Amino acid sequence: MSWLRVVDALSAKPGEKVTVKGWVRTRRDSKADGGLSFIAVHDGTCFDAIQVVARADLPNYASEVAKLGTGCSIEVDGTLAASQGKGQAVEVVAEVANGGAVRVIGWVDDPDTYPISQKRHSFEYLREVAHLRVRTNTFGAVARVRHCLAMAVHRYFHEKGFYWVHTPIITGADCEGAGQMFRVSTLDFLNIPHAGAGAGGTGVPPVRPMKDHGDKLAPWPTPGASPSPSAQCPVPRASSSIDFSQDFFGKETNLTVSGQLNVETYCCALSRVYTFGPTFRAENSNTSRHLAEFWMIEPEMAFCDLMGDSVIAEELLKYVLRAVLTERADDMAFFNERIEPGVIERLQHVIDKPFLRIDYTEAVEILRNSGKKFEYAVEWGKDLQSEHERYLTEEHFKQPVILMNYPKGIKAFYMRLNDDNKTVAAMDVLVPKIGEIIGGSQREERLEVLDRRLDEMGLHKQDYWWYRDLRRYGTVPHAGFGLGFERLILFCTGMQNIRDVIPFPRAPKQAEF
RNA sequence: UCCCCGAUAGCUCAAUGGUAGAGCGAGCGGCUGUUAACCGCUAGGUUCAAGGUUCGAGUCCUUGUCGGGGAGCCA
Image (tube, rainbow, N blue to C red; front, side, top):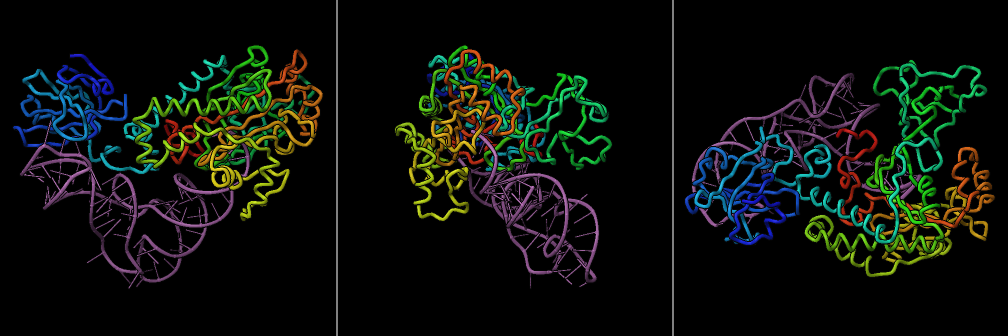
C-alpha cells in the first residue's frame, strides 16, 4: 500500500493498491451487494474528492464506518477501481478481501454543530468560521489559485531577471502619504513618557502627526482615558510631547504602507527588482475591495520610462492569467460554473487583446462626451471616481485600459513631472469588475524637480534624505507600479469580496483568527 | 467615516402589534452502486444588546454592536 495524495490517486491505474488520507465530505449508504458506504474524501490537493467504497465486511463497518460524517478524518487502504457509478472515473474500494481498511483518525464530536455541514453556506457566515472554511469547495479552490498566482508572479519576475527584495515591514519613514498607518511601539500605554516642556531642544526628535488620520481608529490611548473598550483613542498630534526616543526604535515607527521607497534603493543598484509582501493600511475602509492587511507586488525598473512600465504591467498580468488557466483548470472550471459564469472566457479575452493606452486628458474627453449622467462631474484636474473608471473599462472600451499622465495635483510627490509642467508620468491599469488593479509611475529622478515637488506639497526634505541621495549619487530614470495581490485574485476567480480571497482577513473590527 | 438595507432554530429565511414556523442540516429508522439522493419520525428558540411606547412587542420608537450593498480613501 502506498500513500497517494488524492490528486495522484485520481490519475493512478486501476488495480493499484493505495492508501488515501483526508477528510470526509459526504457519506452515503446502500444495502446493495451486502451493504456498502460511499465516502467522498478530500485532502485539498485538487478540487475533486475521491470516492471510497467501504464494504460491510470491514470489521468496523457498523461500529465506525456507518457513523462517519462530514469533517471526520480517515485513512483508507483499498484498491483503485474503475467506478461502477457515474460522477467519477475511479474509486478506492476498501473490503476485507483485498486487505482494505478504513481507519478513523478524528471524529467530529457534535455533528449538529459542526460549522461546515454538508450544505450551501453564505460567504458571510463562513467568514465567521475562517479556521474551517478552507474545507469547502470554494475556499479550497481560492487557496490553490492564490498559491498558483503567487508562484506565477515570482516565476515571471525571475525569468525576466528581476530580484526579489524583502523590504521592511516596520518602517521609520512616513514617506508615502499612501494612507493611515498602524503604529509600532513597545511603550507602556498606561504610562507614556513625555518629553517635558522643553522638548525640541534636547535631542528629542520633533513629533509629527500621522498623516491625515481620523481619530476613531488610531491605535493609541489617551493617558487617563476611560478604560471602556469603546473609548476612542486619539493619536497624539504634532503638539503632543510623547518622547519617542524612549520607544523601542528610538523614534516613531509604523507598519509599512508600501515597500516602494525602499525598493527604489535596490533598483538603483540591481536594475530590476520587486517586492512581494504584506502591506498595512489603517484606513477605516469598509468595502469589498479593501483590507487593513493585504499583499502587494511592487516591481521597480531602472532605465525605464512610463511606457516600459506599462509594458511590464501588461505582460505580468497576462502571464499570471495564463498560468492560472492552465495550472488550475479544475478550480477555474468550478469558478466558471458556480461563482462567475464566463470567468474563463473573460480571462482569455484579457490575455488575447492588447491593453489600450490613453492619456488622462483623453479619458476626460471621452467621459464628458459620453452623454452619461455621472453622480460626480468629470473635470480636468480632478481625480476620476469609481463610476468613471468603471464606465471606461466596462462600458466604453469593454477591456483593460491603461490611463496615463495624470494632473500633478492629484498624484504623489515622487511621480515624474512631464514637460508640460501640468501632468506627471503616472498610470492606472483599469480592468472590468475590479476597477483600478495597478497604480504606477515613472519616478522623478531629477533632484531639483523632486525638491520643488516636496516643497509644493509641504513635505520636509530632511525626512526623505536617503531617498534624495538616490538622485544625488548616480541618478537614473526608473519606474514601477503596485499590484494588489488580493485584487488580482478577485479578478481571476470572480469572487466578489476581498475578505474571501485571503485566509484570515484583517479589516476594521475584524481580527478574530 | 457617510448613505441605504439587515440581524428570528446549527445554516438560509417566513411570521396584520395578539399561541414561534418552513426548508436544509443533525439524530434515529426505511429504501437505494450512491453522488443536490429519496421516504418517515424526533430533537432543536434569552427572536443581536440595552432602554422606551403598549393591556400585550420578533413586529413600533431611541441608542449601541455586528453584518451586507454603495461611496470616499486606495492596491
